[in-house]
Amino acid sequence: MARPTTKAELIKLSEENYQKLNDLIDAIPAEKQMQPFPFEDRDKNIRDVVVHLHEWHKMMLEWYKVGMAGGKPITPAEGYTWKTTPELNLAIWKKYQTTSLTEARKLLDETHKIEMAIIERHSNEELFTKKYFKWTNTTSLGAYFVSSTSSHYDWAIKKIKKFKKAAGI
Image 1 (tube, rainbow, N blue to C red):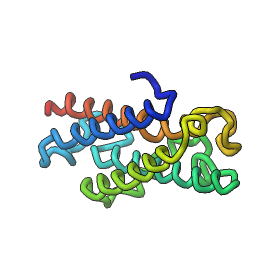
Image 2 (tube, rainbow, N blue to C red; image 1 turned 30 degrees about the vertical axis):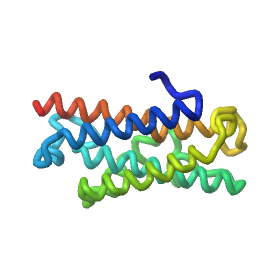
Image 3 (tube, one colour; image 1 turned 180 degrees about the vertical axis):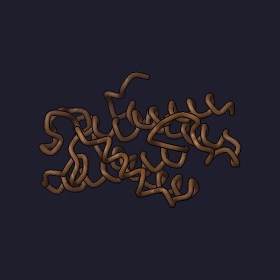
């Protein structure tokens, strides 16, 4: 499916990709799930990919909270610009190095459910009309959610599939 353009598509693709991601991880033998990626990458293992998704959910939820309260969210995060996203992603990576994969998956599940509940509360018009909410600037609220859910899950699936292939799993 192409990038979602309706509430129904966003919900469907987000849930499908989230399930695919979890199924993919579950299909890897437990003893190999924390195996290092056999290729150069910021993310060194599956846990790193999972916490990356979780932390971007947390940022999205903060943007939403601030924006819906009438404020102007700091995007992507305090002290970072969109041009310095690689530095932000490295800071995220460092933050979670003592987190287990089990805990990372619980954290991701929690924030996924919160995002999906927010999406459910909005109409198609609210989600996919550009500039509907002032804080989303020239884009739509739905575009933010597509980026933090379905599209980001697709990125994670591709990275973990690359790991499986390279590791011969």
